[in-house]
Length: 268
Image 1 (cartoon, rainbow, N blue to C red):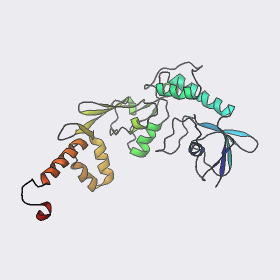
Image 2 (image 1 turned 30 degrees about the vertical axis):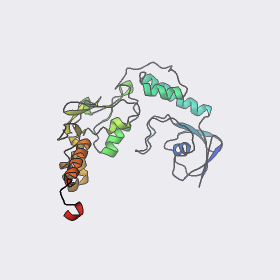
Image 3 (image 1 turned 45 degrees about the horizontal axis):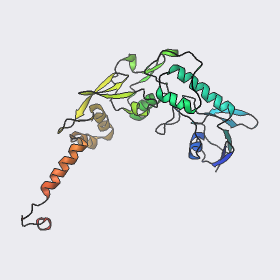
Image 4 (image 1 turned 90 degrees about the vertical axis):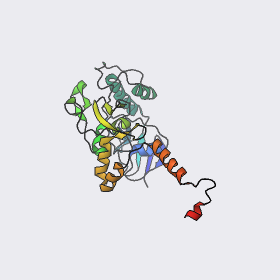
């Protein structure tokens, strides 16, 4: 079992683990934006950089995807590593000057402002981490959004910046977005994924009319699950609250009334 020495503290590690995993397990904080446990490490934001000893010289690497292969010495709080992380954060603040979440992380990193000119706000402070694109493609299988444009006009968008016909309205992109750029908005008959302007028809509870979910999500689940899932979802007409009420009503009806002269055991 290799030993990873992080800021002079020896830590046990497994072959194949990343520096970030070992650091977190041992109480070390390394800032991240594009990292999420539901997806393989991507190293897009470059905000998790640390230094490693290469036998006489020190190399800056991204901790989220650098694998442990043997004994390793890591410096998280070295001047060079801190300067690198803060430099990336200053660039992000220039792109997303109004992002509350980004400002909060920047403050924890000791970054209060940016020396760079602020660019035009795009997609409500999207930091271009790519998590939404990856979860839509790799986990959901819809591939409804992608990177578009160049330079300061770079953005995450649906094809031709029009509502996507491939979006199923699942909301996974909003759930995984680290800075709240993507929002799920509920309308009378549709669910909207903003800022992509995609709208998907809602399926509503047969009893109370509350939305159960996106019709396209249920169709996608049915396709993946096969005939049994198709049959199961076809019968799904009630929201959880109405389903509980319906079950309670059925159970009440099944209990014998007082004075009926017949017990449950006798009837059975």
